Length: 177
Image 1 (cartoon, helix red, strand yellow):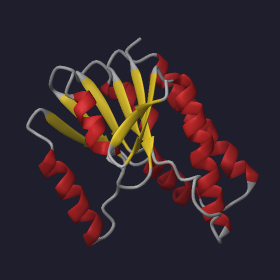
Image 2: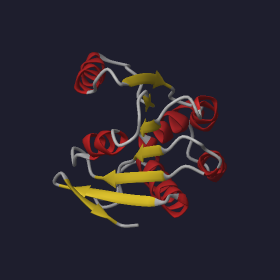
Image 3: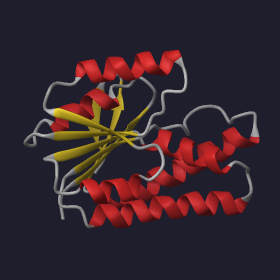
Image 4: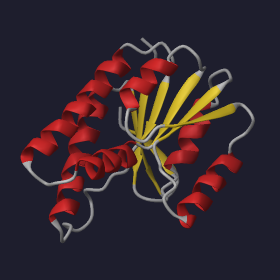
């Protein structure tokens, strides 16, 4: 089993840059598995900036929904796979399925558990980026509260199954595990 690393922190804390630096320890080609969807001009620009920052050793694969299946398909092809980011993947799953009932929450947590099963069998090292969203105020709307709860549960499940876990604060990494 290859090493699995989780990197968490707040928005603009330096998670992606740190994850990229960790991935550069492995031999190319490196895979940047992006879960973002370019649904507006601002996101188009953000994605373009991220791509420009990475070098030629990176190949980008875009997959907003079927993360476990895509990881399994890419396994062994790359020196390392960087998933950026888990919370966008959760957002995509949540918005695709819509609703706020408990069955929806259980269904998405089931997807997270399937992801951990896939990760345990990987030959390629995987580095995942996720956001810490539970340290702020309680969201006003039910969908926001459901997302916050899902992200918190997913981060706990993933952290428990990872070999290394880092949090970033002000661009500084702190190793938790």
